[in-house]
Image 1 (cartoon, rainbow, N blue to C red):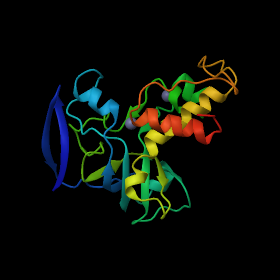
Image 2 (spheres, rainbow, N blue to C red):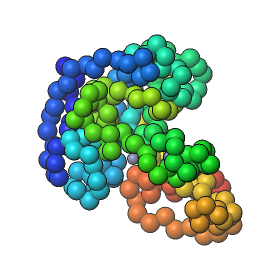
Image 3 (cartoon, rainbow, N blue to C red):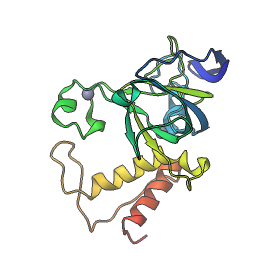
Length: 217
Ligand SMILES: [Zn+2]
Ligand SMILES: [Zn+2]
């Protein structure tokens, strides 16, 4: 059996157990080594953000590939040296874009614009098989359309679990360093003053990302 922390209602967590799901041809099964607690997980559990109950929260993970469906390589994008093999260490892009909305069709590189994304640990609930669609469980079932990022050997699980929040921080720096973006309205170019407000995970990583990008702190 697979143990999972499940949120079944506002502020109500329980320990759930599921049988290891049967793996479809187009899916991958990961064994989760580390799972982060995101601010959005806490907001969701407290009912300040919508979650699809019941749901296994968590979308920041460091994991190992346990099993790979025979056709998964056609349906799951791998960043890093392909092909994906059992035993590879990976993290996941928690968002699956719909592929059919206006933005997916005309701005396929801008995943944040998708109008109907699915997200592990929040909009992908655990009511129906394969159930294990959140990081706070021993295993994560990776659906077709997902993206897996291979982790280098010299990156420990403790650090690798920060990949997703770091991607948020780097994405922010990237967005705001651009010149004005006609799609999103953000971007103010280089040589400006930035205030990072709040010293949580995202705030600290954002300050670090600005520093790495050359900001005088
Ligand atoms: Zn997060
Ligand atoms: Zn879309």
